[in-house]
Amino acid sequence: MGAGSVAELRDRPATVDVPHEMLTPLVVELKRRLCETAGLELVRHTQRHRGDQRVGGDRRPERAANLGHPEAEESPVGKVVMYSSVSVDGFVADENDQPGPLFDWLSSGDVPLDESGVLKVSQTSYDYTRPYWDQIGVTVVGRHVFDLTDGWDGKPPGGIDHVVVVTHRPEPEGWDPEAPFHFVDGVEAAMAKAQGLAGDRLVEVAAGDVGGQVLAAGLVDEVRMDVVPVVFGSGKRYFGSVHAQHLLEDPDEVIQGNRVLHLRYRVRR
Image 1 (cartoon, rainbow, N blue to C red):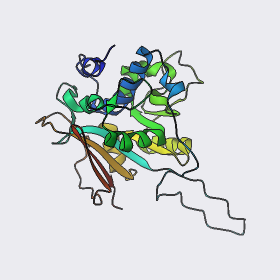
Image 2 (image 1 turned 60 degrees about the vertical axis):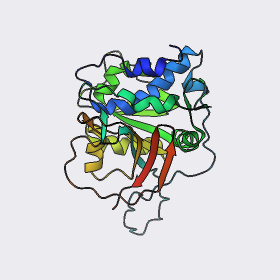
Image 3 (image 1 turned 180 degrees about the vertical axis):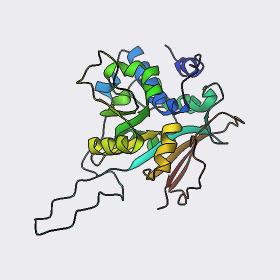
């Protein structure tokens, strides 16, 4: 792929049974493919600025009652973030699972977003997006996404440490047991596994069907949207099959980039 890779991957034929939670991991899969084309391996070379800063999050596991035993130190738990690029009318893909122009902002600027030099955004988008990517420790996806990408050849996308796959099925036959992929039945069990793996780093959940289930279960701390100026009219919803009302706080950040508006909301408890 060359400089037109964003459009080529964006417009590739859709797989009928691929749900719309593919779109968040598709971004990081795009990064990985572009870096491989440039002769880089993003998993090994992406800069990761961990430092000593604790990733935020107000939720911590409850402590058991002290029954005369020394109080154990509480393990840190990072925030759970639901994320995707999205149309102004709330869709992450059209009816044919195509994202259309939702990823165009990734090639709309002149500041390299990663070491490949292919993804280029505005300085404003870089300052917002790069630190967020660097904080992600675990990504949670559905089984269709895993199957679509052939499990990213056993290497988590975008340099992420672990991938948790929500699925009723076991890992594929012949799957490398050492690969940092974890197959878990049910969203609550999957999130418990993801937070245990992430420690105080972020857990990112793909928007769409899986993300909607995690939100409905009350397990999402923050909603991030990269809103692109396009109206789909119909398609695959950012919040999946969620129908009940869920209040968010006023946006913590509203940042305008090139062809994108970055929004971040805390989920009201």
